Image (tube, rainbow, N blue to C red; front, side, top):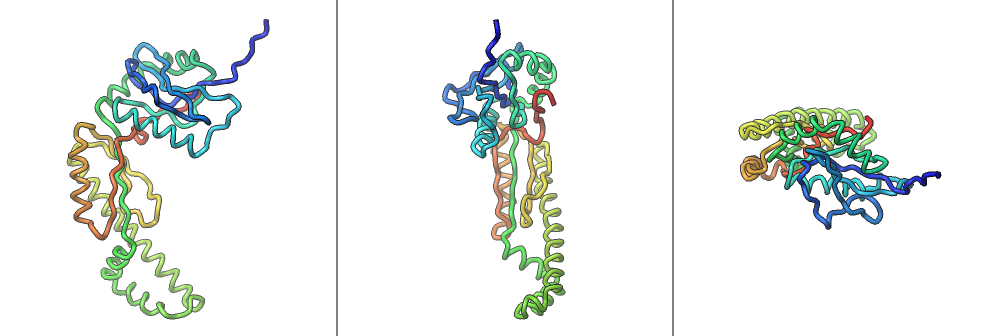
Length: 255
């Protein structure tokens, strides 16, 4: 008798302790979004949902659903994120090829994450304020800016390029110093820090940190203290709790 291949596969979001119960209202990737359940091993479990084998993944909504589910889980329990797009043929493959094959590693990593979550500090310079600061500190740049301000762009192209490069270098130096200052404030709390690359030329700070959720108030206070000190100069945001993407991300099965 010929077996008929299933029309669905199993999408894997992350690894959690085996005793975790999923929210019956939780939804994941797909159109419509699929219900999220668990495949359990002895000590660890996988957060999963069914997906159609012929439905392509990668829509912005899918990326948002993947991250949103993991972040919601991380606020409650330790979770090891699996990279976006992890699909296995069926629940048995999840249980055997993913959970059973890696159970000791997953259990140890979850134990390290117990009571912790990731937080991200993002700060961006106020353009007018930081430019004024740079020109105040560099009279030669201020002179060049004034010299070319009212002249035609085609005549002053080289000077404008030079000015832009020097201002960019000055912002980079400020970013290094301000990132170091924020990192020192966070280090004082005993958190683990992972620097991130800037995502914008006017970004002042971009740091991920792994912190105890019980000390979130202390983290918020430390960030807010610097935000107040930088008021009018830098706009600061603290995001979290989030899944620990920058510290323990599990590869896709088979990688």
